[in-house]
Image (tube, rainbow, N blue to C red):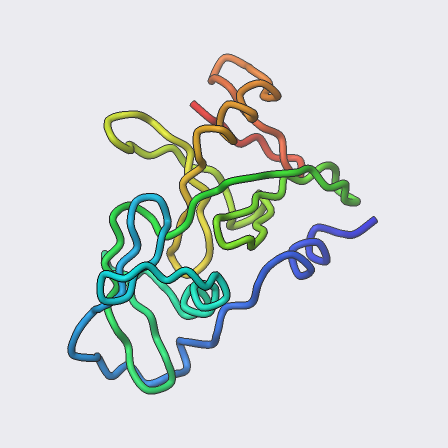
Length: 172
C-alpha cells in the first residue's frame, strides 16, 4: 500500500513551472472555457483533449483572473464558471485509509486530501460541491457524481460528508 504522499505523486499530472517564466502579457485572450468545461480558441471548440490538457498544465487563477502562461507570454482566459468538471470517482486504499480519487473532464485524477478539498459554492442559485485544485483552480462536481456521493455519504449533525484520507469532507 502507498502512503498519501506516494499516492498523490503517482496520480497528479504535473503543472508546468509557470512561476519561473517571464510574465509578458499577450494582446488578446482568444481562449475561453464554458460552464461545461469545454475549451474554445477563437470561438471554435478545441476537440483534441491532449491540447486541452496542455493548456490546463499552464493554466492558473490569481487575483480573479485566469491565465495561460507560456515561456514567452501570459494570456488571459475567459472562464464562465471553473475550468474543470469532476465526472467520475473511485476509492483507493492507502496506508492512512481510503482515499477518494476524482477524475476531471480532461481525464486527470485528483485525490481528495491535503490542499485538494471539497468546498461548497453557489452555482446557478444552488449550493454545489467543488474540488479545490492547485494554482488557485477548482473543478465543479457534476450532478451524477454528486448523487453517487450522496448515496455513499455519512451524516452527522453538520450534514452529509465523505471520508477521504481520514478527513471529513462535507457535501452540505
